[in-house]
Length: 544
Image (cartoon, rainbow, N blue to C red; front, side):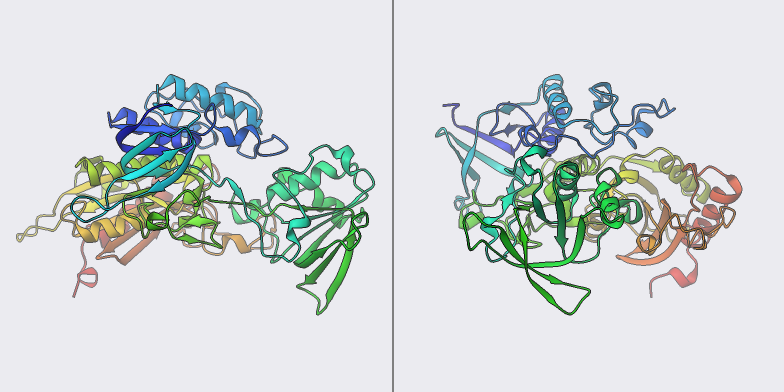
């Protein structure tokens, strides 16, 4: 028995998010413990993805010597003030193996002496009433009989259970989690894959050389990552199957949904009814030799007692969360890692290491501010359009956080109330605040007295996902257009707010190499915007 313990922060799970949270708690000198059911960090990645190749890029050679810029193309390293260890030193492969990640996570944990208790599986979490009649400590019981009590709980367990859609007969399908990955096992077989995510496509690509027929089925339009800019949509590295379909090689993508699965004869084929979207018919039954279920994963909430079980959302796949990644119905229960993607579902990158590593850093700052009375890091700026513009452009030309968690994390410039004699109030620059959290925190006074404030984000343009970027017949804004309002590629956006209401908006014109350093094209228009709206405080912008 590892022994009972009482701590301030209990982090459940020693995957990438749990280690990132542990790192910041360790750096801050907090009373914490990370627990992990496996024997080492990153247990999930010892099995998944099944075909062992990650789709998180690892670009070692960038031509840059700035560690911050390099994190834009390093999607696997965790954050640290020391800047090490870095995943890019593990392997030069652009798409590395899952085993490389498992080894890296163990190195990170050891290097930073993160307090982790391995072989500790949580079996039950409860929250008895406290002495004051309010919620008490979380009580986590473990498989070995230990009891861990914590004031705050951070669930960093990821999505560990398969998502099983409500299809009659779905139990007859072979789940992605357990199906054979040996292509020889499918030689000359007719195969149906239910699902159209990257796990489904990697499975299909693995079978192209051996299966007689491969069909893939799913509702809605297939979305391609190179067009939507959401890296969880179908990646080019997994799309060979589409070639075999469109070039008529016996494979097909079925646009529809599975109505039922049955197998009347235990030695016969599976009969799968598919309802097609683009034709007014139901193909009652298509025969297959193998049916594979690749419909994704979900969060496992079964360890929670009814009294503290978090509300779930999105087909009960994820815990519902506030703008501070806190459970909407269980105070002091927080989430980190891929399960935080509910806040930017299929829009930004909170579901992936290169996104949620920054989310965990922001979560740590939120916890420090709320529980440890440690203010969000800030720096004071001169109250001038030129000084603010220079600070903004310096950040957008370097930041990896705003680059990776685009349109979700933002820098903030907080502007104080002008003095009665008209002298402007102070200006403070805060980095990497979740935009939704910023609005609430300002309204509640968590950042002090704020008159108006600016948000600085990197964003793709409106309807960017509806345009084929390789179609040259589609008009694009010229780089010399200083307005930038029609820019569709990633570019900085500065907005002015007061009382949660937007007063103004400025788009810094996109640039092919993401270098927003032109005086004429980038800086001067931003200075004009700040002079006229943010710092000039025209009458039209004043509150009524």
